[in-house]
Image 1 (cartoon, one colour):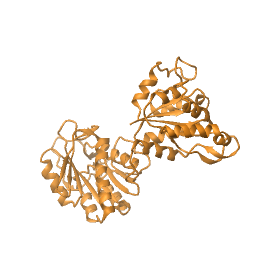
Image 2: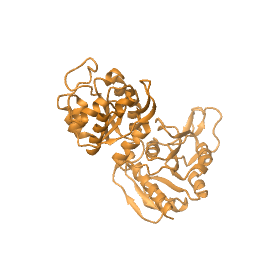
Image 3: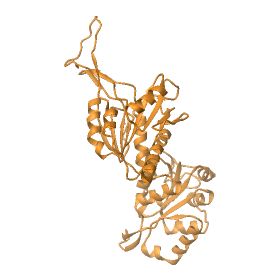
Image 4: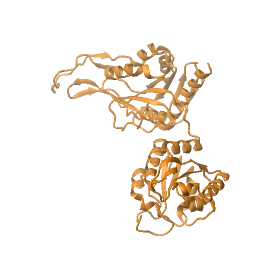
Length: 404
């Protein structure tokens, strides 16, 4: 989903950078529109760096404030049609007045008239300006048109006065935007323990056995769970990914290290999602020194690694357990067998030989095997979309648990 953030010219304009960052953490695509006055308080380059998009600063021509961010005269229509919401933060008394009276003398106010997307405003101004009857009449007019107003906070203001007019807390602005867009916080109060990535089992000091897991599925789950309000503990093998923000991140290498990390954090978890591709075998006797190249065949004795999912299921309690089955053949038989053997509630199975599924790609084709014997065959979708679908199963369990 796409959100346009309008930044008006007030001291609180610098806080808009945090609003943009938090909206991105909610999985939203963000583009920024600034008034000319806003450019006096914070540089457009700040928002361009945060969003990776051009920042719209004026209606026509190339001004000194943003020579590289020129839009065509009809760009406001393109933006108006592609966004799902428009949030103005901070919204000054001037911008609120122009919005209320339908004026369109810059890009932001023109966008307000051109879009049919829901609008949210977060006022910020001097307390006297906030309390002025004209401002309150303008806000009343905007509310009557369906504009959501995130009330300012009270406290010490930049002008030196004390009272209402301080920009609302960033988290409150983000909450209202998400609520307006219908984004869910249905995992609030849950703690999800998620494993991701491969493990590495040492053969000698310079070599190891591993697999092709990229960790993308587990990281997508962790990110989606945070967006839906959950506390997330992410136990990850070695991957080339940055951990999502606001998770407790525990990096590990081997299956044994992953086992210890999972069992240590298990008491905190209300649900466990084991996406990691844990090595099934490891060298029984890793060499203390690098194995030298020779001409004869080399035989390596392997031993099973610990079955982490089985151990977790052994201490299941009231937890919801999700396992994953990546197969090259016999997917249904293997997944259903794993569901029963491991005492899991859900197995997410996929045939890694299918195009668009498997390791190190951004999409997957999965089947959900439930404990009640039912299954859901899902079409090819992004791993982010699949993460959301898996978390829907967790929320369904949560709802059933609440009813009982």
